[in-house]
Figure (cartoon, rainbow, N blue to C red):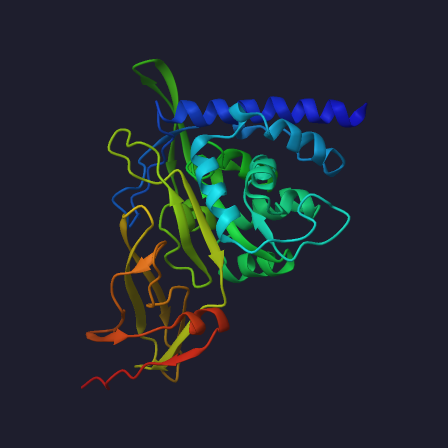
Length: 349
């Protein structure tokens, strides 16, 4: 009886998620952040009732949860498209429906998408199969430390991370709540008069733009060296906002662009890319050379293109001060094996 009760609770919360997703196409959830590098970044969003913790995905009821997920109306079409791609394009695993064993890898997203991942993609969701997911997911998406994020992924054997607009918008309050943080750390929240009456508007602080979920979903993984965009599904454009609804990132070792520059110098790696939807975007990562001038930038994309998917439109360029080194090739093997790629920067005069 307990399992049935929890399954009903999950169904109710998933219906709530579906309503949030559908309503989003009518009124986008937005955050204002002046520090964005992307012109497609939202400006504001309304804080929704997801600030309260709705519930959890309970291991004993995974079969009940999957049964609910099989109802066609429960899986958002945008998510369905992305998860269908994931199921067809990622390695199969064992135990994706059996929490008694450990799958070869996991898929990390927010907890209330877990059963969609299990049913539609037939891949293990961290919050279900690994029996730890809610706390780890919230800390992963909020951390401003790439090393901390990497440690969580390695601990949970994560191979893919999935984000959507709601995680970077309306659901962000829930992520903060589960992590034991206060929303005021990340957002200035104000109540203002709008066309429909009083509205709650949140303006982003620097702490928000430094979170993992922001860097992934709003910056396409820029400033991160081990996660690369591999697929996105875009909803119809609303209010000139072309940000994709669902993005799938792959966790890779990353190639290491290494060399020597002036001590304490800012070094920036840049690569132009095009997603599977045809959207063009720029990946960048930046480090500062040490006191001896040595530097190493980890980059997740190769310059070897495939027939479809996310492909490079250029080679890497590396800028150190006023000097730019172009035509830097990175192979897929370099990315997957974490190989070192030596870059020679001419001495400054």
